[in-house]
Image (cartoon, rainbow, N blue to C red; front, side, top):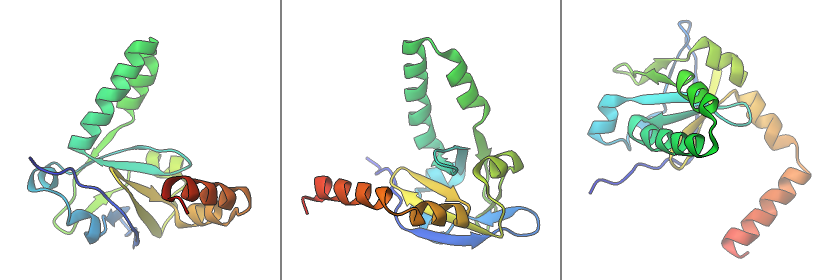
Length: 154
């Protein structure tokens, strides 16, 4: 049985003049051959970022969203979720074009683009937006400390 890839760490790459950015090699290298051939799906994420899934992982997420929408009777949410998903193909150098509407929604202006591994997905951020969130301090740091204590027992 093939393992599902998981992502961790972060890396920043630059948008080129065509609006393309390369997925960091550290993230591309863990894909199976099947996932590498099918590339990725982008959707709007939380907190002003984009979520990037393999097609296989997106299929799992999509199935869960559909089940939840059917149970709650909210077809509109599922319709919007599917309508806003964008399949992207990587070129031979691992680059893809960031859709302008998704860049706008995530506040990505470039030239830097931050990729953060988040287990089953990669988050894509405008570096300054991510840094601002980290610099908020206070309550955010306290939340991190409490979560760390609960998870790691330290």
